Structure formats: structure tokens, C-alpha cells
Image (cartoon, rainbow, N blue to C red; front, side):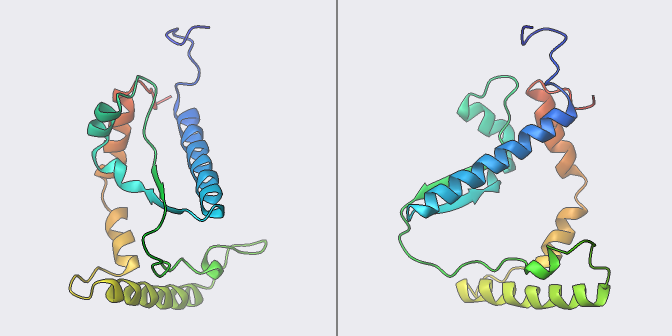
Length: 160
């Protein structure tokens, strides 16, 4: 079957989503390999800030779509590691933790830890708390639609 055939079955929302997941897994494998060699890595979600420009710069053909970027290099310094969500709010045994008070307490502690991390980096430019940043992004209805529009422009029929 030819790619330009009407029967091109890779062109649907499920497979598009699976391909994105595969790209993220491949990125993390590359990150792990690079870090095992003593290299530093930065995952670049910011490449999605201007998808059309990135597609143009990279001359991406139809049926390709940027997911994430990965910068790999020798670190000029050893900065403090950015705090990560505690495992206690990410991983559960056999059931989701349904104690909202405990989850809120742990998230509050994490918010404080992240705030201190950013404050130590640049106290002159404070950033909102972690949960405020996530809440702001969650209510931006345009994010998903813009992403879907860019994918459609690359030839993906993600309504199927």
C-alpha cells in the first residue's frame, strides 16, 4: 500500500497519539544513555511554542510532527537538580490514593520546595507556584486546538 493511498491507516488519532508516546519513550532512552556517559540533557518542550516555524526550519515533510527536543552536551556547571513530584503522589499500590487531604498536604510541601528552588536561582524574578502554573495551563483551551491544527496541517486526520 502506498503512503499516498486513501487506505493509509497510520493516519488516525490513536496512532498519532501512540507515535507521540513512542517518541517520548525514545527521548527518555536517549537521555538515560547520554547521562550514563556523563553528559547533561535538557528536554525542550518549548519547541512546541511555535510549531509552524519549527516545521519550516527543519523542513519537516508531511506526516511528521515535532514532539519534544533534547539538548545533549557537557555541563558547564553542576546546578542543583530541579525538584520532582514526590513518588507518594505519583505511584500507588493497587489503588489510587483517595485521601485528598494527604494529597493536598504533599502538593503544598512540593510547591514550597519548587518555590525555594526557583527563588534560589533568581529571587529577582519570582515564578508562580507549581500548582498555579499547572492550573493556568489546564484552563487554556487553545493549547490542544492549536496543537491539533498544526498536526492537521502536516497531513494527520486526527478526527478518525
